[in-house]
Length: 164
Image (cartoon, rainbow, N blue to C red; front, side, top):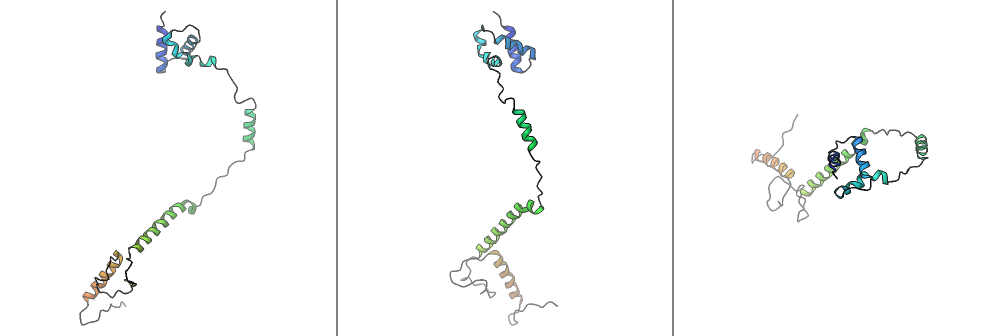
């Protein structure tokens, strides 16, 4: 027996080109008992609707319960979000960055082996025995102080000009 038409319909079905009538022909063909062996693997696909019993899963009162639940629900009011609430995560992140930078700068000040504070005992002159890695800010201020000292004459005291 030649099933060329059924094979053509199957090829068109897999490409998505069949009409509803042609799909009905395929369902009718696969619902019969005598199907060739090479086409038996498609039988569960097309005979599923006929073999599966139609059940009403939701029940008759489902719509009534759903509409009653919708009717008794109160409308949800929109929350008002202020600008401070919107920027709170950004402000938290900025505070964390500020804290980390502050701690980083504080960690740059070396822990001296002696109990001397290198900043309060600074007299304007470089002492290699006291230098154990001062930070950039301290180095910049010492550079300015050194320049001011070098501009002063050796016999004149180093004084800052007074602005009037």
